[in-house]
Image 1 (tube, rainbow, N blue to C red):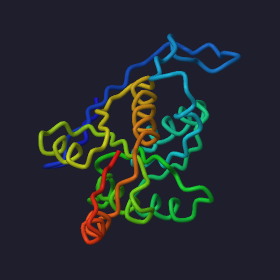
Image 2: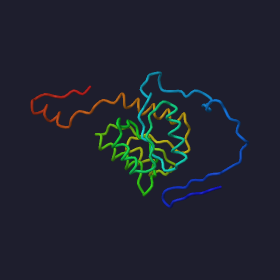
Image 3: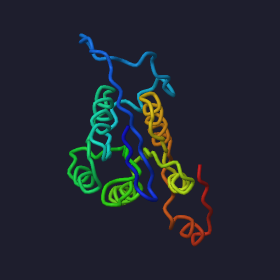
Image 4: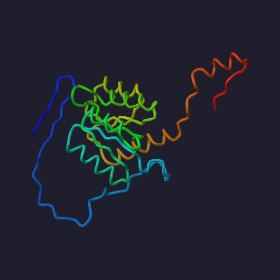
Length: 193
């Protein structure tokens, strides 16, 4: 049994148990049942994902899983590395999948804010967290991001990706702030459809 705890942040408990010798397989294991996706459309296929997770084992698992699902993944363990990968990507990620608590006292929310400001807001965000405090959940919800509680499952991750990419596809661009004022000056109105 191992425990990691940070005051005011949260705790992680892990239990290591022995298991029988694994028999090699000719192909990697798959989920026992297919994941129910939102629709049969292609809106969540081959998403460019920036995955930010400071637990190295979880980062490798998420990266491998998302790559197997056909997504293009940029893995990072901290805020600085994630920012550099994002800035230097030949095709900028359209999705940030980030841990809430990052090293150096930073958060996935701070990273999302920083990255979104550099691309004019065109970045979908999913926050992974083991912190289920009301304050953390409220902070994530106030940003309009999807929250997944740790531990989570591969089907939950895929459904969350489908959800944010569906919302992204259906998002309508906002009217420029100056448009209603300009229309009033011209004596007309604005109808937003």
